[in-house]
Length: 214
View 1 (cartoon, rainbow, N blue to C red):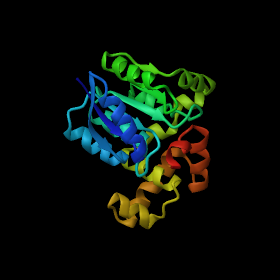
View 2 (view 1 turned 120 degrees about the vertical axis):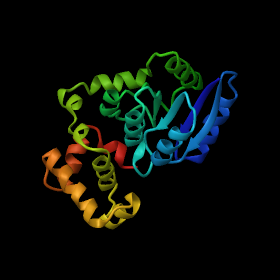
View 3 (view 1 turned 135 degrees about the horizontal axis):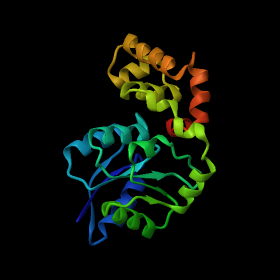
View 4 (view 1 turned 90 degrees about the vertical axis):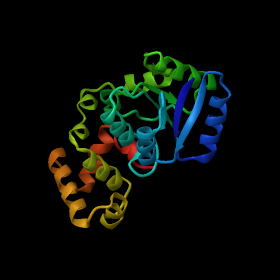
């Protein structure tokens, strides 16, 4: 039996996908998560074969959740779900080792096929994903400066791009305002930028922007 952790912040989507997968003879959903943080936590305590990860979630988001899961277990199998055919897939996820990408507009059979292929050791890319990636094959995308950031710095970037204040970030990350600012200026230095406006421009340029603005 293929055990699935389903991470999506929309209850109707979770319920629908869970019902579809549980109807399969060889697949069952053993856990659900409503945020990136919860997905990271549940992967660490549940025995799962595949994580089905919505890329657009609140908090640290799906991209950072993938990063943390794969840092803790490089063998973890994650299939990222994008919201539509035109979603930008961050190149960071390829380097991290994500196993597959499918669109929420994909047929049910494709999602099930993707899960089975990933479990067997293959990678899976839906046709629309391959098309989008091919259209974005520019050198700068494969040298994303965001790969230089630490886990905490990446979390701060995501929250900045979501428009959170220093106080909101400190509350969400359980850090002092001073510590959040320290991470903020440290990531500025690594990315060679001076302020949040330049951060937004850079994030948009390399495809990080779309994953942070939920």
